[in-house]
Length: 59
Image 1 (spheres, helix red, strand yellow):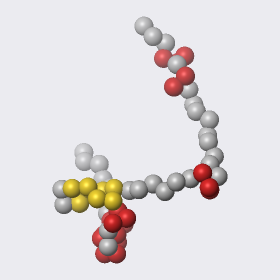
Image 2 (spheres, helix red, strand yellow):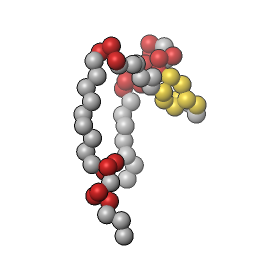
Image 3 (tube, helix red, strand yellow):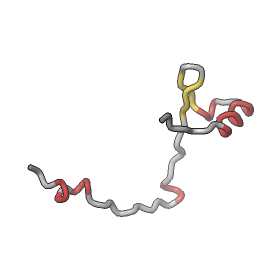
C-alpha cells in the first residue's frame, strides 16, 4: 500500500503572486445552440444574456 501523504503533489503549494505585467487575458468560451463560441465574439445583447445565466447542479 502506498502512503499518499508523502507525495509532493498532495502537499499545499505556495501561493504565487503575479505582477500586472505578467498576467495574460483568459478567453472564456461557452456553449450556445449546440456549439462553442468565445464570449468575446458575442454582441451586446448576448453578453447581457450570458451575464444573467444561472449555474445549477442537477440533483
